[in-house]
Length: 198
Image 1: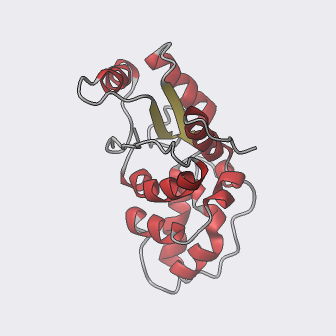
Image 2: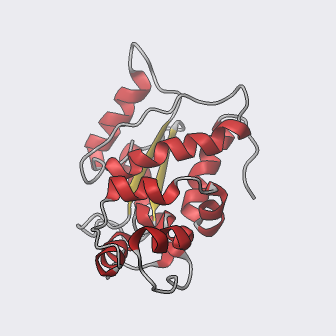
């Protein structure tokens, strides 16, 4: 369960990372997209229950992925987002809440050479941990600005450019730089009997 199209674009790269680590155990990962934000409170609980109890194809597990920055300031950070989603759904051991701190684009920032090449920007890499880019100017806003000011004269289009940034990249780079991404990947690996990433 994801918020929008950008997270859906990430799926082929996630699958490509997981397949060699889960030989013969690769899960069927289906994405249920919500426009702009995942449901809250009782609505989230209802969606999770429906997915787990679907009479035709019940899910073995549900992973919810939300951005911390949703434009509404519902969450202060990833820990708060995960705690709220857990409280909304209740004691369901097959539900795993995860959050991109502050938004999905933080997971693209470790690929700065690709961002520079695609945008034509000469800016130096954003300093510090990618997931610490704050609410005042979250990663998606920064990427828009970098693309707008770059010599290629292109606007940042989330679905197009996220895929272009990730193409031919080693997802391990972002996983090691982004603890929330690592936590989500480790949830999948652990649930499938794979070896978690230290």
